[in-house]
Image (cartoon, rainbow, N blue to C red; front, side, top):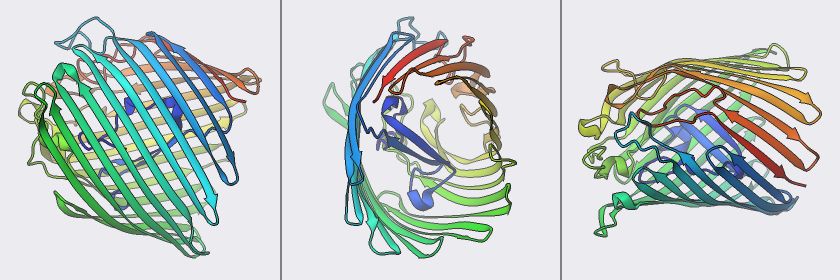
Length: 493
């Protein structure tokens, strides 16, 4: 799910009550997933209801939401559907540093739908999912209407004892209309893929496949009803990988070739291995490549009042990344991971040219360390994360925008009684640089939650964010969340 115009997904439109889980794989993954997988892959799983469901959510800034759904599943398959709505009176989205500041709150409303089905027959399973979000987003000069929709169907199953197939087709759309800017941006993306997995011996698999994508973007001046750009392109990719395990070793080798109708061909590869030193120590290492085609907006957008215009001469980004990990599990309830990584990106695309036009930076470098640890002791569950991310322009040494050098997070959770858990989370980030040389100050946020299972079917959740009411900003001139609280009551038999 991504806009052909912007090249990214509007995460702020994602209805969280319709999400079962989110899985993230860090680092370039173009060797299997193709263009856009330059920094990692994020996979979203919608919620699978097996009974009736109802939830109501009330919070600060006039935040009110509710969702209702139903589902039924058996060994042969099933279906579920969940609908929801949210309305927020809001707070000013920009702060006094911004020339357009207004103390008027900027509200938000959203109606959403998530549905999924599956049906098993013989050795095959047919499944599908639909996610739709229709939102109104207020800002200082007006309102934008944003429609996000994605639909996909998958056929997955065994062809023989050692051979499996997966067929997928999908489509997604984004409509973004802003009357104040006389702008309507339309994005359409259609995709299809076929994959074969061959298990030629125990824990030895060959994966091969091909995928096709067609994307089309339109930017329209609604005052004159003239398109400022209408562009489309196609991408065809073919890939193969070997995934194996033997003794204390396991490995992954993959290669992929893409042909883009605009930018031509690109070949990427990846290699990873893991070595189990003993029962509680493991070492992993990987080298992966990635590339990303410029989005249509980065190429062709006329910009806003002369700023942030596209650049038709942009070249695709290319990257390669190396990582080595040390994983330690001193006892069953504790895991520690230390990861060191080094990434190099050529032709990095950023809005840093004249009047913030999109340009390619010659080279960017990202070197870092990340430490994560989690452990449990009786009623206690604890998580710690710290990272050092030196992301910079490799030619000038200047820091990449909005990238703190250091971050850390401490999460402590405890069982407080029968059906009750509570916890606190402390997150901190260092200074960062923004457009125009502005400095984004470091900050620390303390949050707390209590989850109470009132009975088998009824649950109550209390959550307070920014408990100490710290003032901070993730983008210069834009406000971030002040101290806020929410209460969620959910019922499911």
